[in-house]
Image 1 (cartoon, rainbow, N blue to C red):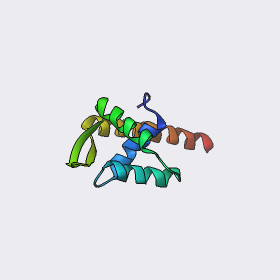
Image 2: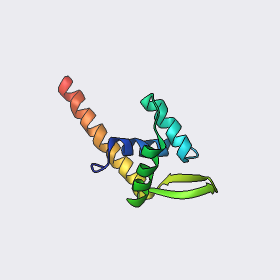
Image 3: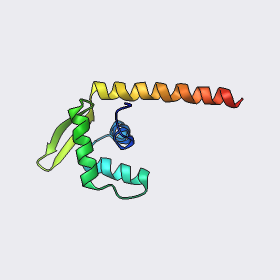
Image 4: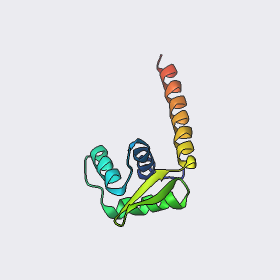
Length: 97
């Protein structure tokens, strides 16, 4: 995950948390988190790159709406990141004591 931008990481986390992950739902969730507009020109190229890297699978809900689901590799990437974050937080907590 070290080679992804922070925005791309956030997209992966949003996809993991959505029941029906499609572009506008991802956009809405990111806008809530960022407290501002996320334009299509930023979101969709990043989704496409995550698809190209094999972390996300793109499907079709209907003619106008694509679905985006994490692949096994995408889920593994998030799990690895979570372990790394947890380990660093534990080290920080021990240092503070």
